Image 1 (cartoon, helix red, strand yellow):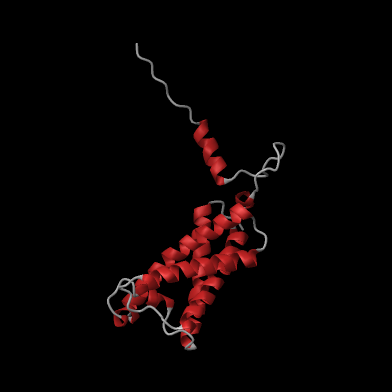
Image 2: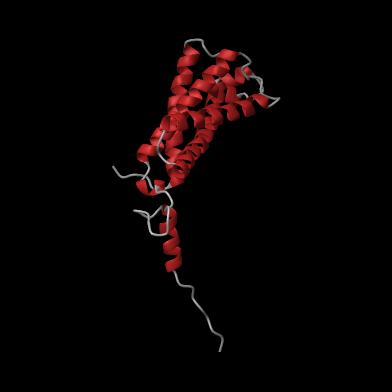
Length: 187
């Protein structure tokens, strides 16, 4: 299988995989009555004027679209963490990403005064936290598995070690540097 060597694209894919896991966990939590409402309903509550509108299919679609965008940002963050700090200890890195990212997003969504759908009970918020932890784990493991090794090369410890493969940025830079500027002379 060809590995992905573009960090943004890898982050988008990782975020979508994480979102699928998050939504599965969230649906389970809602069906089991652990959570008062789905995360998509809560996200839609920021943009619509009532809980009834947020629970309609249009509100659910709006909330899901919001979650897709935010999940891609989370996936890009997962790739940044792994390319900066390495692919070791994926479980703690995934939980860290998911819990911190999810906590920030939930706090922002709940902090909007116009959000009529924000959950106020501990079970719903704990459910969201668990769903986001699973999101982080899925995103980090996807990025580590699908990412090309060149993305994870660490900087050399001394001047004598070179990376095994060029990163996307190095390839682009070398192509850009190969183009010679045209010089014009006036007669």
